[in-house]
Amino acid sequence: MSSLEERDVGVAVAPSSSSAGLGVGAVGAAVEAVAGVAAMQEDVGIRREGPEPDQDEPPKKRLKIPEGESGKLEERLYSVLCCTVCLDLPKASVYQCTNGHLMCAGCFIHLLADSRLKEEQATCPNCRCEISKNLCCRNLAVEKAVSELPTECTFCLKQFPRSSLERHQKEECQDRVTQCKYKRIGCPWQGPFHELPAHESECSHPTKTGTELMGILGEMDQNHRRDMQLYNSIFSLLCYEKIGFTEVQFRPYRTDDFITRLYYETPRFTVLNQTWVLKARVNDSERNPNLSCKRTLSFQLILKSKVNSALECSFLLLKGPYDDVRIKPVIYHHSFSNDTNETEYVPLPISDSVECNKLLAAKNINLRLFIFQVQK
Image (cartoon, rainbow, N blue to C red; front, side, top):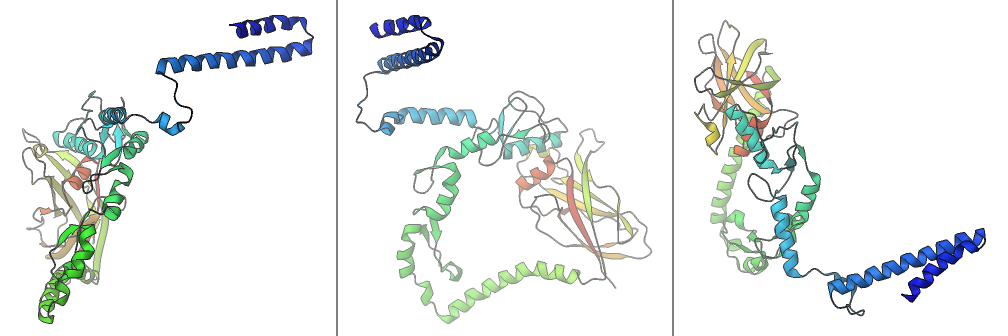
């Protein structure tokens, strides 16, 4: 306490000094007082935490969090940052409602698609506030935090940040499952990557006879021809004299039945000097498609104009210029006349139910239609 009393005396005596000495003395006394209080706080902090640490101990070791406490922290972060729908950590984009509740991209799109099928307003599962693509926004801070959380490699069982796990499992992990480089000629082996050199040095497939290899190559050529058939058909259609295409927009409507069903229809459009309409339906007008995990879309092309003779056409739908949905092109054929002006409902060739949910969650479905008129 003597040092503090001396500081108090120094501050009290300062007014008797000159004006210049007053400022310097007050500043010096204030600096000393702050240093003394900081030293006292540090002493108190040390007494609260426990015995004074060894000064020779490295700083990082003193600041290291015990393993049990870090595990508890990760568990708390998992529960805070998980999706409110599937209760799992998001793997890609993270959306939040107006009240801050988090949803992974897959669950967010699924909620919007379900609301479209039920003709209801989509709501947050936690607070029941309205959600939509306009009302909800991405939470980049949570996405970054989730990407830094540790997760376990499914092959080597080591811990890695989520942001680097995919690269590790595809390129770096020595226990990742891989296949023999002679797989194309019939080798069925697959196993850990670190065993691959030993297997390839002993693999018997490189020593196959020419007859065996010709049989394998024949199967490969057959699969290749099947894949190229579609592209060759498209190239041949592009040689036709009359080709038309347009951007089409499917808009959602409901049927007039007692239990209404969702369907889509485009406004009338003109291609090849004829008026057309496209219609689409979900799961072939299944009664409750919202209860099904597997979802599909099918469509039909309708000729609205009157024609004097039959109109032989080939047509296909592709994704629009501003959509990211994956559509594998399929060519359909139909002969349009005044009596047969509608095609059967044909599948929209999307890859899976996830892509279907993306289309259902959108306000409208934007695609591109090509029509090729077959010359007789």
